[in-house]
Image (cartoon, rainbow, N blue to C red):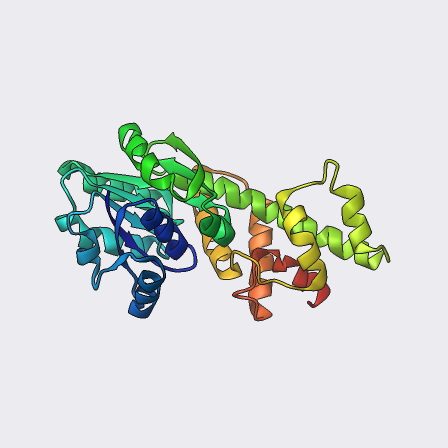
Amino acid sequence: MRIGYVGLGVMGAPMASHLVRAGHEVRGFNRTFAKAQQWSEANGGAVAATIREAADGAEFLVLCVGNDDDVRAVVHEAQPVLSDDAIVVDHTTTSATLAREMADLLSPGGRHFIDAPVSGGQAGAENGTLSVMAGGDETAFARAEAVMAAYAKAMRLMGPAGSGQLTKMVNQICIAGVVQGLAEALHFARRAGLDETSVYEAISRGAAQSWQMDNRWASMSRGEFDFGFAVDWMRKDLGLVLDEARTNGSHLALTALVDQFYSEVQAMGGNRWDTSSLAARLTGR
């Protein structure tokens, strides 16, 4: 496939590399051109100097950028030069409103937009084991699956445009609550004078077990917060969640509270710490 890839950051670069290794013709673009050059030197993909160059004649345009405005700008610039039946696959976490807007923009020209946020973090991108929750046209999704299979272990179409983003919001609600519970549990164990490793071994085989516990308990205990999704990005995502909740009437008291706790972590200088740094506001790191 001829694929344009926009956004070669910590997630996008390894995902685009998997596409090259899968035999696709990939042209990568990044706003910081040096990052695109580094990616090309490491993986053999072609470098595009502009978004239009990356998108020119592409059958697929894959995005992994920052926010709604970034996606909107990329799609508007790329649209005139995409192939007639091109599919834009957007792995950015955005609002559901943006996804619907982009789908409506591309549809009249016979092109398709798939909102396809991912879960699995940097490790999942590097190992090709991401989970994709998607929204869009069923036929377009079936075509896109063959591309996403290069870096995803699980892909599911959740419904029409915007459904992938709404599902990612559910994912972030779950993570926020679990990580806060884990931070409080660790804090309680420490204050009670318990051995934290022994506590983990005692409770991690029962109902309290979670991915976050298995992968973050030890690093949280050591006060190490450099293992994943940054607080700044989590606050962006929770902002999208809370905006959507105001629209659909959801009551998300815990999510709103945890969002404020993350603002305290930011005030501590933890903008780039990972999401498990909720523990830092209880322990002083």
